[in-house]
Amino acid sequence: MAENSGDNVIFVGKKPPMAYVLAIITQFNDGKKEVILRARGKSISRAVDVAEIVRNKFFTDVKVRDIKISTEEMTNQQGEKVNVSTIEIVLER
Image (cartoon, rainbow, N blue to C red; front, side, top):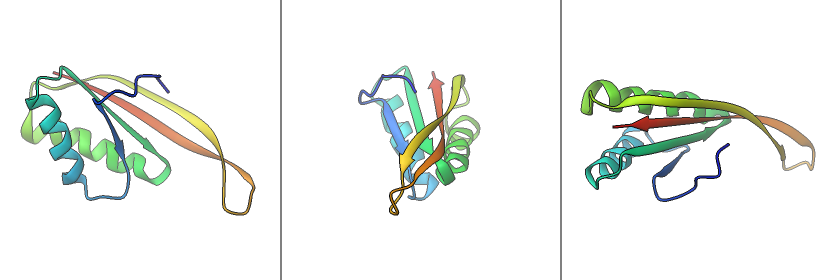
C-alpha cells in the first residue's frame, strides 16, 4: 500500500457505507482533489460500494484514478500468521 496516510485517507471498516460516503463528501467539499479509500478483508466490498455511491449519486465528476490490491500478513488471535487481502481506491475530482 502507499505510504500516503494523510488526512485524505479513509479506512473502511464495519460502519454503514453512508458513513464513509459522508466522510468522502466532506473531504471533497473541504477542497481536497483526491481521497483514498483503504479496506482489508471483508470490508473490501463495502469500499467498492462506497466508491460507486460517491461516483454515481453525489459527484459525477469523480473518477477512480487508481486501484491497488495487495496482501498483508497478519497474526490472528491464535498467534497464527494469516494473509489478508487489501485494497486502496484513489478517487480524484
